[in-house]
Image 1 (tube, one colour):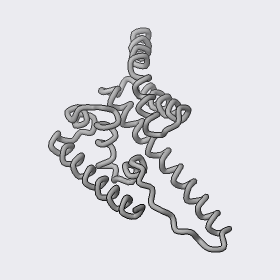
Image 2 (cartoon, rainbow, N blue to C red; image 1 turned 120 degrees about the vertical axis):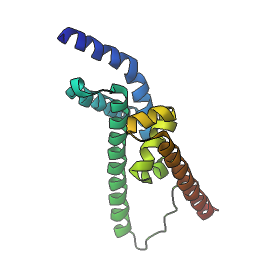
Image 3 (cartoon, rainbow, N blue to C red; image 1 turned 90 degrees about the horizontal axis):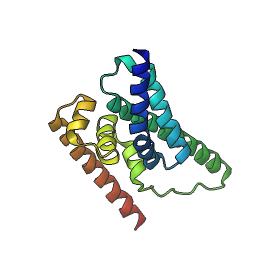
Length: 163
């Protein structure tokens, strides 16, 4: 029994790790961090191996949460650097908003961010996102629409400020 579980785990790793790591790479823009996140997601899956009904969904949702934690850490570091440099400067400079889509997605509420990450960044169909998040397909569609509207509005404001 243990041997077959190990074989199933090994096959799952071989099948999903490259795609998961690639997805993480697109989100964090760093190869090493992407592999750390993908590896951590698999480590967490192995710890719950017998109780996880949908391993792929578990991996992507776990990785999305780890990516969010990574983004938060980066934002805290950026704020600390800004604070330190603004305290050292004689006069503070006005910072232009960053219209980076990644930062805008990061700023979305989790209810909207997770479907965006799974649907657009992991290329999962709405039906699969619905299953993974435990929400109805119509709710996922509405959340994706709301997220796109917010992103569009943020991008317009950012572009208006840069012109």
